[in-house]
Length: 313
Image (tube, rainbow, N blue to C red; front, side, top):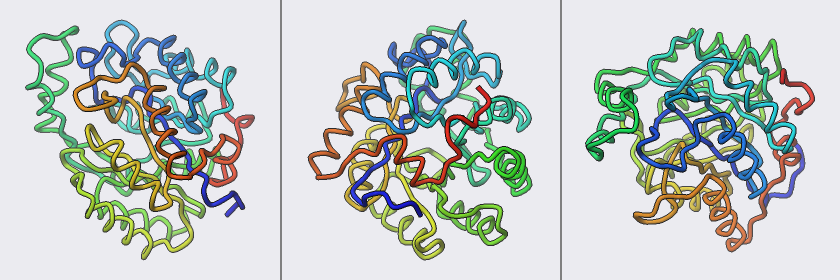
């Protein structure tokens, strides 16, 4: 691995995602200009990696349309040096072909990659609201009681081949449960994934492992046993667990992920005003812990990325 000081911490900011809906927070960006503006501000606040989804500019529903991505990806690249990480998860109900359309057009340095199929349930969120900004939102959430996010071994192999091998994209390997670590180990053993690879340990999504600190310890111990020194790792936790789990990750030597995709809040009962506000809070915590925030250049070296000059936008 590249020699970067051991106290450097990569901050990823997940700007909008495909989980929360416009009713839930006025700060959640869905128009391209707002996604771009919040991404640029998050990078200025200290995020080395920006994880990006697209939304329909008319009503905020997730969209896989490459044309919408291209309304904000070049603007972000022109204004920041941040690593741009494009989703391969997209939004609920998208086919694999739809989910891959934008990554294949953009050829980014990084993409997210869910390491298995899973129940991905958001329906409890719908009970918190009685009125909605847009008609699609309630149904989008409630129908997840019968939804499976699909990423089979064949799907994962295809993504690794056509994005990884053919375009030099590396991945944020998203592991929502212990079995996902073993799925990743399978692809490492088959040489589809080579070090230094980046593992995102994810907690608190209904259908995945719960947001309990003992689970973080077990997931990290399992990853150490499976991967040794071949990987770098990060933690994200949904909702109220976001900052505590990120802080624990930093204390254990890991990277962190924040952003409005994962939590809409900045404190107990207080909605965040922006993604940058969450990044700034996390940066303050890291610096109080004696850790330094990695620059985009340092993140590229740590993760062996191809560089921003080799993308398709």
